[in-house]
Length: 326
View 1 (tube, rainbow, N blue to C red):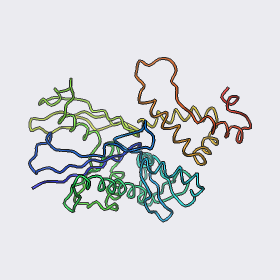
View 2: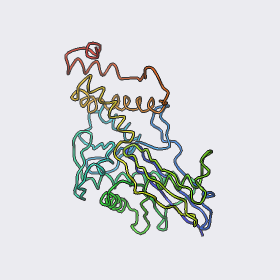
View 3: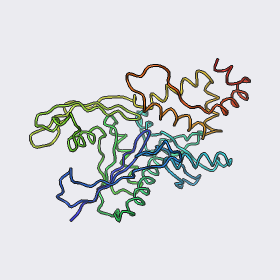
View 4: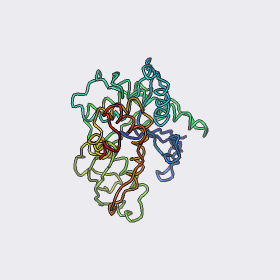
């Protein structure tokens, strides 16, 4: 007898999934975990184990694409002037953290300000990841069925209403309530480190070991402390704390530099009229950000869409890019 387990990591910036099919009494380190090894961004420098959390829908709320494919297809749609027929949602997860009065009727606005019920956006995103997973694992002769157990990750600092919202969204995406477990992101990381301790941290598996878990995500930072108990389980020594100061807060400061130089209206127009160049700017910064080290000194160089920015400076600010930057 075997057990099927499907897990979706629904992140602020990036999302992904994994799947395992193992005999019932298989020890955890021996479980074989399948995942999509390379989400293709369409550009060589952006091959990733995860894909951006963005969703492209038709006006009838039918899924067109999720992740990198959604970004690339939306770019083509804008170039063809068909954007009025679609919704494009981008980095929307943090609305559940920032909104203290979460209700099933709350709405989200896409990149152009068009609104849809938030529960639809989240459920369709989970469904898109579920569909993609199904296509990948079927190639490996593994099948999702009614006995598959599901796991969905959530930040530890989220409110109960936010967690309930995600459970409802998963149900609407076709995941049975009695087969679903919500996993707190830092707890998942802690269990992983217990199972596969890295060199230099093997002492965390010892009975009585106490350690701090710091989950640095795209949207949130969760911090807590765990203790290894004699029965092998983990005890939470203090309630998880943190805030919305993840990697996207760095991105916001980067974008703020451009706002200070060119103005918010120009950047908004670039996002709407030239999404390919705007996404290229964000991706360029993301790639450079990953290479930065604490001992980095000197200038940081990134590639910017100079031609489009100059065109926008001419039309919106009546000047060229050199003078605007100066």
